[in-house]
Amino acid sequence: MRRLFPVTDVTDETAAAEGAAGREWSLAELAAAYAYPEPGPEGPASWLRGNMVSTLDGAAQHEGRSQPISCPADMRVFGVLRALADAVVVGAETVRQEGYRPARARAGFAAAREAAGQGPAPAIAVVSASLDLDFSLPLFSSPLVPTLVLTGAGAEPERVAAAEKAGARVVVAGEGAGVDPARAVHALAELGHTRLLTEGGPRLLGQLIAADVLDELCLTVSPMLTAGEAQRIAGGPSVTLPRRFTLSSMLEEDGFLFTRYRRA
Image 1 (cartoon, rainbow, N blue to C red):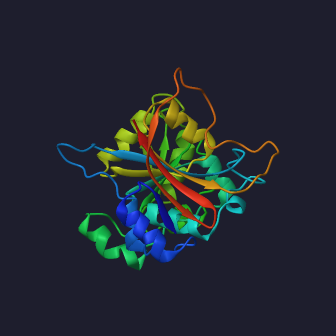
Image 2: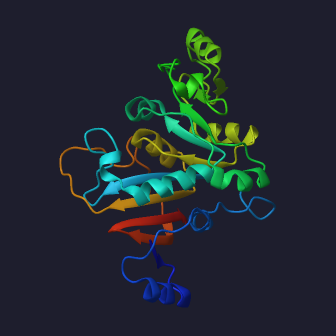
């Protein structure tokens, strides 16, 4: 992996020493490259970043899954972003399609997470209005930390009871059946989850963008073309004016670009 941006003397020297192919970065180096902003009087109360992958022609999936357009380096970044987060926010449809499992503890991050006051692994927070979820899955039946289910106040009581019986913690984040994105971020922060990561899917990411609660996007640009009618990384309602984000950093490995954009 090579750093392409920001360009500094160190960047140039490293590139010259390592050659065009670069090298595999350590977990500590990746963690430093993707560190969350420091909370406090000057910093944000919470920070929501998205992590998505897209082909050159804008496809977020191939045959319904993101794995075919990913690569080993993308999965390393994926793992590091999870290891840095308090909670991973994901849509119910993505849970079903991608076969989501509980986040696992990683020995390489155990000391850092303990020092930061975090649990052994991030909580998975599933956004679902209908609670049409298979609560027998390991995500609910055997997580390292309890899975959260974000839903609206109008959710069916029977489904809420089923989620709680399975061991999930139900968090109300909306007045009706649906979830209000801003209220969801606030509710997670009240539970102590201020370093947030969303992995989509596209519908959820679109809702977060429309609600203007996304602070950062980590986008992997895959050097592939798929054509077809695959989803973009974000769908749903459009915004009145396009949101402007600023390029914060860019890494490269094997033709894949790992970009990091923050709200301007």
